[in-house]
Length: 213
Ligand SMILES: Nc1ncnc2c1ncn2[C@@H]1O[C@H](COP(=O)(O)OP(=O)(O)OP(=O)(O)O)[C@@H](O)[C@H]1O
Ligand SMILES: O=C(O)c1ccc[n+]([C@@H]2O[C@H](COP(=O)([O-])O)[C@@H](O)[C@H]2O)c1
Image (cartoon, rainbow, N blue to C red; front, side, top):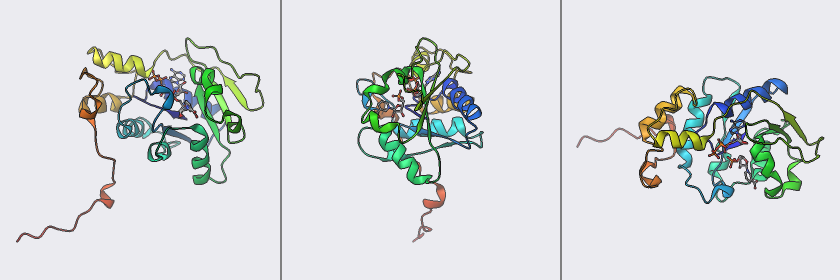
């Protein structure tokens, strides 16, 4: 499941869980976007924050994982590249790509859309306020009704900026992550203030003991 996840919320998690159950999937890989080119007119939080919030949100589900392929690939994020990279990592897997109804509505504008159908089976899930359409591609796209979650990342960001709670709209750990790094508070759009370094596991970051002299 690809997304900007700025922040990840329970609408994303319910969609992933419902599709995994319906299609008996072994795993759902959440893939935060690197540069979501169709959101270039919007302020998007640094990729490392979006990645780490996605890790926090999915950590308790053994069938959920998070991939860095899109945030580690330079340039705009295209799903054709995402699917190629994931297929290289899981050569034997049959890939499914989960999208909400709003993303499905836009899919014909995605790069190399005609190639996408050969790379994965697409599952479009219902989302309040959006029509669910498969553009007549019934063999390539499945449509699925899921419990209606009227939650969006935009609304979560706006609520934080307005000092309103986002408890129960996003996982508890994500509420705490947002507070810890001061994300989405009104800072005149200066996102660089909240930049963090890429995550490096401690085991790769051990420095030799410093000499006391
Ligand atoms: N409440 C929801 N129900 C079903 N699908 C959703 C829901 N929210 C997001 N999705 C789907 O999850 C994927 C990633 O969405 P994204 O990260 O852009 O979240 P968003 O809430 O739409 O964000 P924003 O408000 O910033 O545009 C998209 O395919 C989107 O359609
Ligand atoms: O391939 C494209 O051209 C393309 C254009 C827009 C969106 N997408 C993908 O659709 C997913 C949801 O995107 P978004 O912007 O709604 O978070 C995410 O995986 C994006 O990379 C892909």
